[in-house]
Length: 292
Image (cartoon, rainbow, N blue to C red):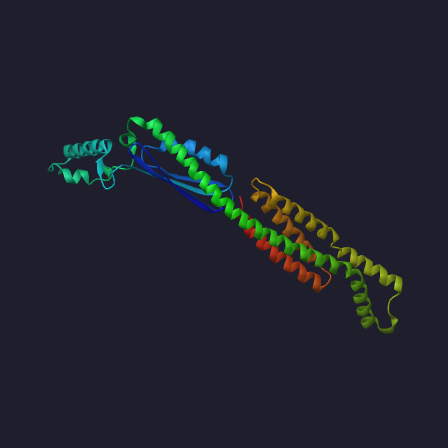
């Protein structure tokens, strides 16, 4: 299911923004983009997401900044020390002029934005800041859930309409199937009369052949199962918990029965109903991929 949430927060001189978004996926996929020095938050954040969501590709990003820090840069002491050590090593191997300061500062990772976090950004209130960030993230998750619920309500109305279409087609198939036995008998009689002429075929033999073909073409079991699947699908729409996987499985069962009905169809009328049924079921399968 899709959804987006953005929550701003602050603590002391720190300001931050959580952005959480989700798109459709068969399972639950999580991606985090956290500032340097805040990776330790990720396990708790993952646990929080899994406790609330069951399906979707969820992306989480945190931008953290200090009050008035925008546009400022700072030196990454660890990266600078590593760069100077490499310069000294190269100087021992090759005779060359010492590097200029601006050249060292231009090396990747030596200079970084002051709002990227790290121990310096966290400061002495690291635990308190982490707690506030966690609370703010819970707010972002709640907002994402609200957005997903709104989409779910809209999808439920679409699915209910598709179930109504399936029900109408199943009723039409049942009506068509009820007349199929007589239609088969009349068709056999007409074909034999044309082939055999006046000799014809004994009435009891004709009845036997018609009965055998009618049994092979009997779709009452498929119709009963389709009606049962409809009942189960409507019940799932009323449940409060995740139903996407169950509806996905149910749509496959719908499709299986529709395929069998088309294969057994004794006339084009019933076959056309079966094809229309498959069309609606395909639309249903597309929609349930979006449901948690």
